Image 1 (cartoon, rainbow, N blue to C red):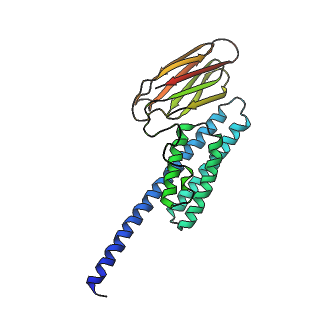
Image 2: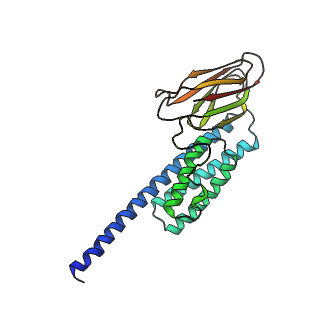
Image 3: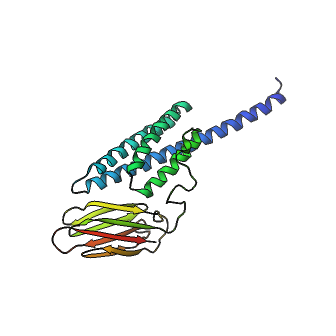
Amino acid sequence: MTTKRMLPLITLLLAWSTVSFAQSGRLSDLADRLARDTGELADSSYRNYGGSFRGNRNEIEAAMLAHQFNAAAQLFSRMVTDRRRTQELRDGFQIVQDLGRAVERINNQQGRWYNIQRTLTDIGRELGSESGNQYPSPNPGPFPPGANSGRMTWSGRVDDDIKIIVRGGSAEVQTIGGTPYSNATTNFTAAIPSRRSVPVKLNVRKARGQVYIEAQPSRENDFAVVIRIKDPKGGASDYEFEISW
């Protein structure tokens, strides 16, 4: 074959190699992101369980499933790094998705779940997986991309003094004094913006003591809003509030 005839073939091979490398790099980035985000979900799930005075079966199941999901995501990331065959990656990803569906059924961390859901969708597209549409990207629920407004409701029993740190789409409770909180429930319509400050308003629905905003989102506190609840009377009492931004 003459040099002139070989040039188009060489050009085609180089172009194909560049596209393949780019796709491989993007898949690796997505797999790493999934492993990281599921790790944060697993840690947060255990914190929710560990912070309960008496963890119920749902909290235990949520924590265990979240850790299984994270372990599978980490192994999938390693498979991508090791450049396993495409069919092997698809099979592994299918297992990750199956665990994701189990976690989704009992998940109450909507802000974190939206990011994981979006990454699963992107990985499915990269692999050309038949199940890649299990997590469709258009209108993926109450967390539209770039949402700047939303609400979160919180309810639980408080004894003495706690802080509720709301960052993104998760709420972490810190017990300052008294018995650790129990049976707390959160519900987000959107995640609080994580890269810019937004003013947050508080609407107290049920309270025996004080409920107030101790800190507004700012760069200094990594864009979290801190809610303080002080219950001065003996024993625990039910509290419920809503924040909006």
